[in-house]
Image (cartoon, rainbow, N blue to C red; front, top):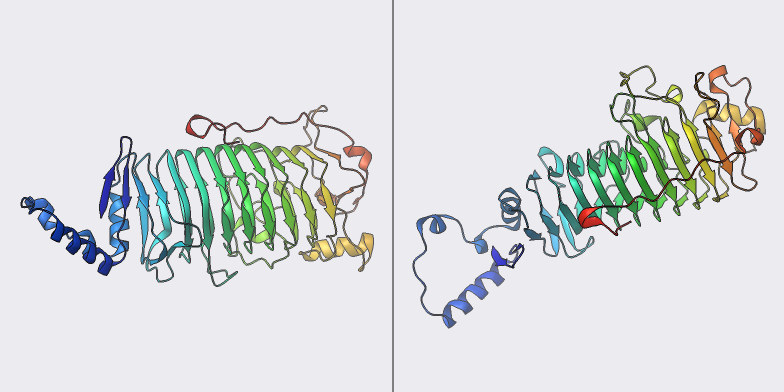
Length: 430
C-alpha cells in the first residue's frame, strides 16, 4: 500500500498489479541508497505488493482515519464478504462507475456489500454489483454524499436480488446525485427516516421501486430518470416507524414506462405496488409534484393512497405519530401522457372496465378517496392545478360504490414548500 500524506488527509492508493508493483520496487531499489532495517511491526506485515486488492481495501476501511481518501483502481474486484466502514470523515473514490467495480457475485457472508456507519462520508465514481443483500447501506450519519455510484444486479429483475441499491437511512444532510440503480428487489435508491435530503440527476431502472423517500422530513427529488421499474418514484410513510415524514418536492423528473412486473419478496411493503405506477404517494403529507414529464405508466401516472389501501394494512403496529391519511398534496404544471391502459391489480382492472370500458384508460391521477373524518376544514387533501389532467376518486372506503371525477373538489392550492438547503460542507449543493 502506498500512502501519501497531505496537509489535510491521507490518500490511500491500493496497489493492484503485483508484477508492476514488483517492477517498481526493483527499480527503486537499484537507484536508492540502502535503507535502515524496518522495525519488527513493519517487518511482520505483508508488503502491499504481495497483498491482493481485496485484502488491501478491507484493511484500509477497517483501519481508516478521519480525512483518509481511499482510492479504488480500475478493474473488477471480487469480494466474498461484506465490507464495513465505521470511521467519520472518509472518502472512497473510484475511477468511474463503469470502470471501478466492487463485485460480490461470489459473496458468501454478510448482509450488505458495503455497510457504512459514519458521518462526513463521501463515496463516488464506482460500482457495487451483485450483492446478496443491500448494495450500499449508510446508517446513522450526517453529511453524506453519494455521487456517481452504480448499484446493479447484473442478472436483471429477480426476487433473489438484494433489496436496496443505494440505501441511506437515519441520516441528516444527504446528497445522492448522478448515480444509477438497477434491478433491486425493493428500491433502487431509498432514503428513509432522514432529514434534509437532495436526490438529483440519478437514473433508476428495472427496480421494484425506482426511487423511494420514506418517513423522511424535507426532501427534494429532481432531474432524475425513473424508467422500467414497477413504480417510478414513491413517497411513503410506513406505520411502525416513529418519525413521520412530510415536506417532499418531486419535480423536473422523467418518469416513463414503469411497467415491469413486481418481483419484490412477498409480504414486503413494495410487493403491493401495482406494475405500471408512475409516482405514488402513500400516507404522506405536504408533497408537491410539479414540472415532471410522466408518461405511459400502465396503471396510472400518479397514484395517491392512504394506509388503508396498502397491502400491509392491519399487519403492522402503528407508531403513535403515524398519520394514515395523505394531505396537502399539490399537483401542478406536469406533463402527463398515455398510461392507465393496463392496470396492474385485478381490482383496478375491474374499476377501469366498469367506468371506462375494457378498451378505456384511467385518467392521469388515481386516489383511493379515503379521508380523515376528523380533518380540519381548512386542510386541503389533494389540490390539482394541471391543465386538463383529471383525478379519479375510486371511493375505496365504500367498496368503490361512489367512484367519480369531480375536479371542483381539487380546485385549490397549497402553500409551496421551500427548496432544501444542504448545510455544512454540502452547502450550496441544492
